[in-house]
Length: 531
RNA sequence: GCGCCUGUAGCUCAGCGGUUAGAGCAGGGGACUCAUAAUCCCUUGGUCGCGGGUUCGAAUCCCGCCGGGCGUACCA
Image 1 (tube, chains in turn orange, yellow):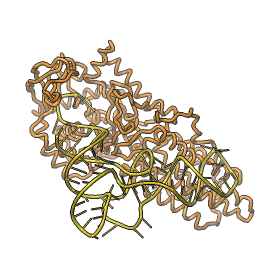
Image 2 (tube, helix red, strand yellow):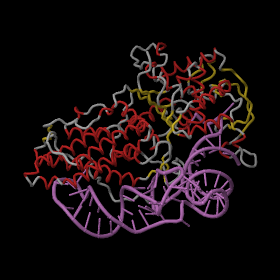
Image 3 (cartoon, chains in turn brown, cyan):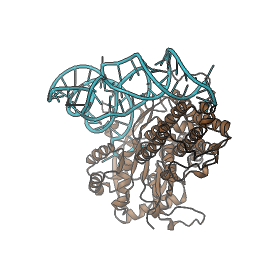
Image 4 (cartoon, helix red, strand yellow):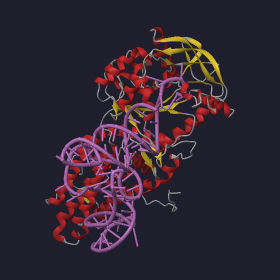
């Protein structure tokens, strides 16, 4: 069966510490895009999950006097809670300790090993006993010594398995150079090409001996080793999508049909893991496994939320907790802010006072209040009944319809181009136009004049019809609020696929619902973020 | 060190060779009353990081410097 679905993934989060705003941003971004395509009527598969193996997990668990598995289960629960709170509607959830994932990883490794793509080699070098890893010349201080953080550094040699990256570098360079839209934003491609140029003849170490790390997936061809990071984590994108599902014996396992999903339309990842992990390792892993150029995935690389211009980090203690923010500013308030105040692919500065301000002005005052005033007037003047065929029309009406129509075009162009902030700006232009329209048409005045009855009907109809469009456009961004919005408009059943939005969704005689504040004013203690 | 990105009004950003540099928010003034004291109109505000250069003309292209972010591939 051929590819038919829109397949989108996120990075799988490392279950070593609690989630922060950066994790939340990435998942909301992917969720909005996934919902957008669903609302356009496409079949969508959205995969996310957690990366539970590895050295840091093993070390942290040991430090806390527990085993890796309970430790990762505890952290995994934090992520799951957050995704629930943020309305992240994923279709597939993968954990790297899942049996079906391990099966696919082992199968892939075995095939590549049989194919001569993986070989064993001895590496000799400096090894930090404290950090349990090799250190390189790059880790040396300026005086040539290794810093305090490494503890005792000894000469050490170890056998490991290597993946023949170098055999595929030429192919990858060629593929990237002749293919335009593999990586969004486009300027990142230069990074990859530069990294590739410096990669001559280096293969990738993909194993760890069990006496050093045993919290991982055992190599199928050597029980003394586990595979290390790359084949374990990156493979999730196919194992979670039903790749080689004929290998699985668990009858209860529900996995999608891989051929309908692959290749991925968007691997949503942070800019820190594009090079080398995804753009080089993952692409080459796929190529080595027999995937063709037509079966290569695309990447959507996002930037970071900084805190006052600086990177968020545990050491500076400027971690922002998304759970708290969602509680304080509502789930949709946070989702809106995260999509509205950043340009996809670039960095942005996180500012809680802006989150608060945008909620108040753009959501409560502009969208929420527009709905409220419209439903209120319709209820008061017409018992909530919309008259579509009024026989009245004028330039003012026409200009509001024009604003709606122009948004419909621009919105889709921006959504397809991953310019979500720009799509929101377009919708905002419509609510602005509608609020101005209300001022200029002044239905509260028309209501006092019986000779203006037809015009009053047409003004109310235009406002309500516009709001249905607005709710539809915003639905991927704020599913909960827009659901309530459509309920109040009593129009949930009248909204077609997003691509098919046209003026005239509300039939003549449509009964609107009762107004109820969509984005209630925030009850916040007066605290500024400027401490 | 090297590479990529970035530095524009108080704040967040757009503009990326061409008239007196724009938007939103914040600040100031006014109008209105249907509405969540919401909305609408007007308005204050900028040596476009710094220094050179190219050009008839640069925020916009080039070079250097300074500040910030990320990466640098056996560190998830």
